[in-house]
Amino acid sequence: MLGRTERESPAHAALAAHLGRWSGVHGVRPESDAGADEQVELLDLGTSAETLATVASIADLAAVVHVGHPELPAPGLEQVLLAGDASLILTAAVAVPSQWTWVGRPGATGGAVVIDEAGLRDCRDLLRTLGVSPRLVPTRTPVEERLAVAGPSGSLVLERSRVPAALTELPGAEHLAALPPVWYGLLESREEWPRFEDPAQVWLAFGPYDDHRGSLQPTLAVIAEAGIDLQHLRSHPSALGPHVFFTSFRCPRVEVLDALVAELDARGVAHRTLAVLPGSEFVPGPQALAPRWAGA
Image 1 (cartoon, rainbow, N blue to C red):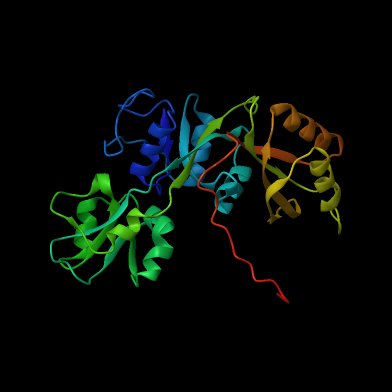
Image 2 (cartoon, helix red, strand yellow; image 1 turned 135 degrees about the vertical axis):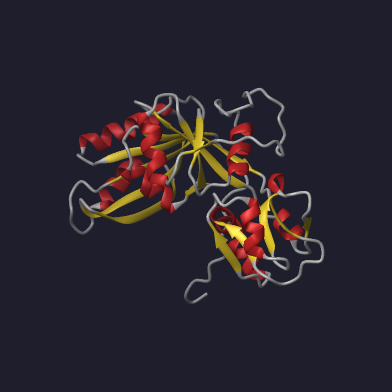
């Protein structure tokens, strides 16, 4: 079986399961030719914490979750994973074409632009450039209730497969259609990380072996000695010490990961592998910055 969090777009999560050929989608087998517009619901597993706890406690249940990007994980997901059961791990990732569109009744102008939590996450920056002030509703809100909130002159940002026949696309919808794909991952409960012979993207969290200035440096040296080039490094305050560190990197084969964590164990460095995502390239990549350094 497959589920999702209560705040996730049901249409995007189901499409991710189809594109990733992840088993358990109700009404669609992995080899099915079901299209993106087919209504397929995943189980609503509640909040993020409830979803993780349920996946960890029920055999043969996995969840489809938004990951940010395999090379640049969403900070909220990193944190909830590390706070969740130690068996939880992401084992696959897939890019899903954006399904968001902007619709309203014929002739609708002005009024509220009603959007749910997943839509605001994916479309916030674009809507800001369009001068739109969204009105947020819970993702569970039925379309009929959203229409009532919007009123006769309002509009909705909605997945294409959920648009009622009475509504039409509004000017500006073409900008939403050009949004980049959204990355989703498959969250499972496993006793050990998957074995892999070809490259995979690994998310590894660790805590310093000791709590003092410079304690991060020896751990980074261990990672460098393993031949690993970090693509992502982020720190966060920890209840068990000053910081934990989240990393993401490309790993050529599982033996390299095995040797790395064995060395961390030997040095007393607490760690946890949060994701092993098969693949050497994840296109499109994270949005690149154009830094302007001091003195440039």
